[in-house]
Image (cartoon, rainbow, N blue to C red; front, top):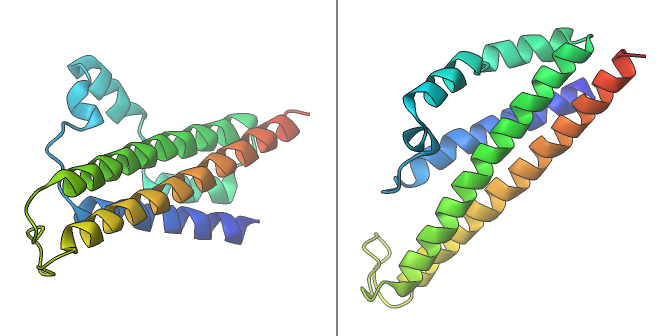
Length: 148
């Protein structure tokens, strides 16, 4: 279970990191939409990757497991937001009248290949978010079990 958890976390973190490099979006991020007070609270409550690994290795109390569950839910929310952004980009590419799509693969149909890329990225991000939500549910159950 622990090995599988670590693999899923590593996959989710890798996917999240790589999605940041796929495309830059013109829309403001979630943090940009927050007030300064909310942004400061989010940064203060953030848990680092190193802390997540340590907590997974040592979690025994309900509080530890609930902290991990909250982390996985927050990461799932972030991945779902990224997925929505990729879906929006796919729509923009489909509506773009430029036949070359502006990419290396110019020519007829490249817009659709680019839109398909965005659709694929969105699908992968949603699958990773689903896995993280399952991890959160597992840790919520572990918290219940630990409190018995």
